[in-house]
Length: 498
Image (cartoon, rainbow, N blue to C red; front, side):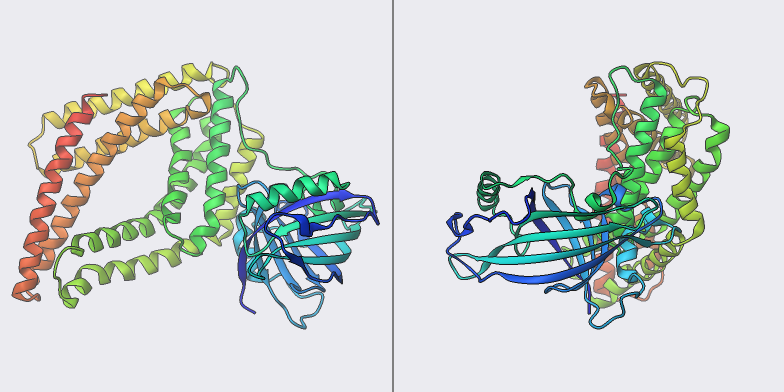
């Protein structure tokens, strides 16, 4: 059966076994309820020995019984009370069937090369009542569960409990119904659930991943490690999106790599450089691989934009966009291959080890604000020096064009240095970040027009296009020339703010 995914929005309560549930037909928007149905559900939960999934509030199970028997993967959504659930039915598959690849791929950045093993077995007697809305459509489901659970971890134990679950159906967002149900169920004997999931209760405490944050008086090392943890989380979060080539995912994962590298470059004496050099090189390689896919992705979007207002023939569209599409498909396959390699998983392991046990450098204990100020000033001086070199060059020469690219890279480095200060919550860095972003963006826009005009010229030189198509190329080139001059003017204004 093909995988299906939906957003699950539910309430969960602990309750005394046998406690009578209230009549939920009094809830707003509910006009009726189905007769209760009772099911026997048997589930085996899977995780790594390190509980990498449970630590990230993710559950993976194989369950028999009920209307949704099969494999389930539940992940956080960032919305309170909501989780993303991926389901795969298995029909008559044997109980010891391997975990489907469709469930492993979204979490492989967490599990990596570690084996998935059974960590808990749960048996639930579930009585379900479906609530109907005014149009006769099911709007919510109420489940009364009697649960018996056996942890399969070393030293694990057996336990029993009862709970209520109230779930909106079809990814519902009826907050009025949800709030009313919570109030009614609490007033009827429901208590705040002791665990976020049945698995969490079955296996007990787990090494839950917490969002990185700073204390009141952070050192430079505190700030650097916090920033590394933030961007590590971003890298892992975008991994499954890149694997399905979701929109903007390659770009965001590449940015995470660059931000991690910028921390090493911007604060070189806070961590021991001898211990981080290899990590920096691995991130550079990953960013380059992702960059091939990202560059073709950007060029496809640019080409489509150039042609949008033009009466271009199918031949011209194919000439301008066809090659990039092929390049992108090939680059995405290369990225996926790299992301399935032992080298990539070793990189992720190394980042985690660095966060858990950072190797301090000579400036690890200085004040975080001082470290940021030094980094920003160093990058500002680097940009000014590059601009002075640019002023001595012949405008529009190849060297001049390359120097603009150098300035853009240094502006990006400055921007990342100011971004690294975000956990400090200091407003004075925002103006610098804004100027650096504007500088970087304007030079990026100029570089795009330069590359586009070069490609247009090469295409025109082939003499394979019709007269009308050549006219279209001329119109596009003229627009790109104007856009390039506009971008340069914006760069010169932005440069004054640094």
